[in-house]
Length: 101
Image (cartoon, rainbow, N blue to C red; front, top):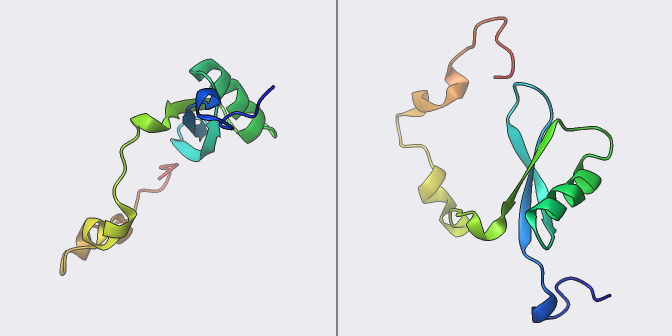
């Protein structure tokens, strides 16, 4: 048996793994893995990322299907416009009894 990714013919696609820790929570990216298809990617993700019963559900997404921003363009993408700090959620309070905000 050859190691996945050892040669170009044997390479498996990369999958991004998201796990939801509890009801009402969002899925959170926990890592990546190589697998030949989505079914095995979910099984491998379960074994790799939820060994201690951390999750309720797992999503896997082909890494090739994910579009990201350029990390080198971080400042222009995420810098807050001057004088508009009120747009950040940290300036607002949430009502008591509202969970998972």
